[in-house]
Length: 114
Length: 115
Image (cartoon, rainbow over all chains, first blue to last red; front, side, top):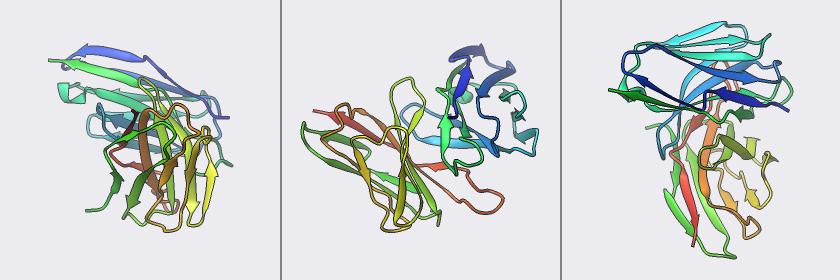
């Protein structure tokens, strides 16, 4: 059964800092991994999807990497802004035979201070 | 506007009552999902459906039921057997074909509380 862990659980940084959020997963037979953002009381917004054949995926100031062999993914946020404050969740499928269902980490709550 | 619509935004349940949460999508996605989120925690899968007229239990299906009679709709019923229903419920859908398969898109959620 897939298990997903995110470190740290919470992070507070000053505006402008570059930061890294970590995600680890136990079943490395995944075909992709997805990062989401959740604002308080809201649904999830998909940020990046990395296919298993990719090492990195970039969108604006966000860069996500995937290392299947070590069971790790990182989300790098460059030049953080107060508007980046949210909870960031990573999600991995349960392996090649589990179809489309995802297992989520508990998230990293990010606060960017002006 | 394409997307996923969940209703109502807030719902209150009396003890012993069944309540139904609505989820509709106009993205033409084959797969739909229901998750439960408790404060400070990640999402846990309740039920999912990969095609019309078919659905599978997730990790915490006890006390819940679903139906998938139409591609666009995947309602979730929280039954009286669910003893701790207070949570934030999220519906999602995904296209399980092509290069963008399995990207899950989420609705805005329904917050269920017990009176």
